[in-house]
Image (cartoon, rainbow, N blue to C red; front, side, top):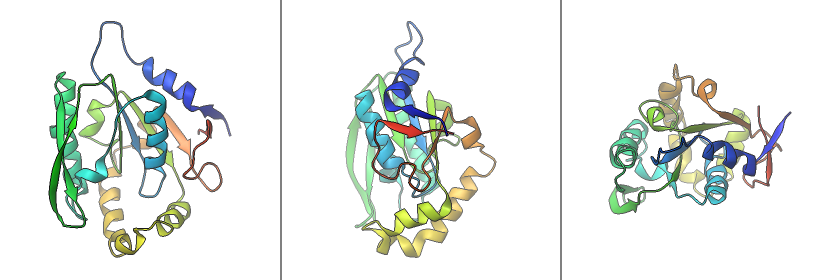
Length: 198
């Protein structure tokens, strides 16, 4: 399979900026639960020297995946598209209630990662979309290895149904600017300089 590097990916993303256009470039990292989005986005945001927002923090409980996308647009993406600073309210999953507000300053590039960040209405704000392609058995293995799996396990089926409902018909992998192979030993959760692309 062909490979590429984070350096090359960074160059591709920055090349999306047109002369005279100072709007924030928004990079979405999407994939099904357990695909490796968080670790990939962390590495990418470091390479870009860009802030990273995880949409998990906006999800208002186990049944709120779609609501998190609405919050992502209303609180973060729409203000940044207007050249204004943004702020969003984190949801405390332990206390099951809204928590503190978090500021997102006006920036050149923003990385957002999380389940379904590549589907409408978020997709309209993206300058570049990455899809992490990870087989179901690899995603399940990684989820079960997490410390929070004991809390996630009872909600796994319901969360998967929400993902499927939002992704069905959205064609996210087909619209992605880059599809990353994160199967088996292809990468995992620790990313080197080079990774496999499809």
